Image 1 (cartoon, rainbow, N blue to C red):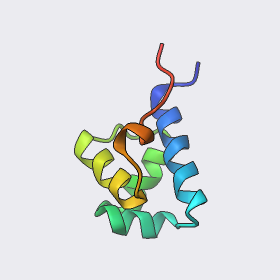
Image 2 (image 1 turned 90 degrees about the vertical axis):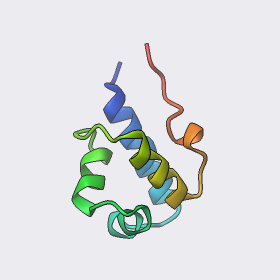
Image 3 (image 1 turned 30 degrees about the vertical axis):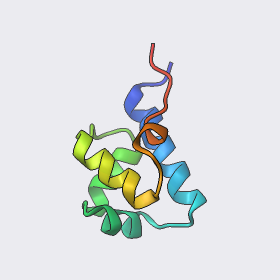
Length: 72
């Protein structure tokens, strides 16, 4: 099974691309740095709950939907 960080990053990227947002635009809306967001999307960063909530809000999705991933 893929690491949880990778799964989360892929979900965030999918939501972002569906809305046709650049990483820079999403990072601006979420008040995080673009390189930090890129690290999250690549599964290299472990974002805080506060940052996940900001990203979910910037994407206009529920936090629960953003983190709906398979964990075993």
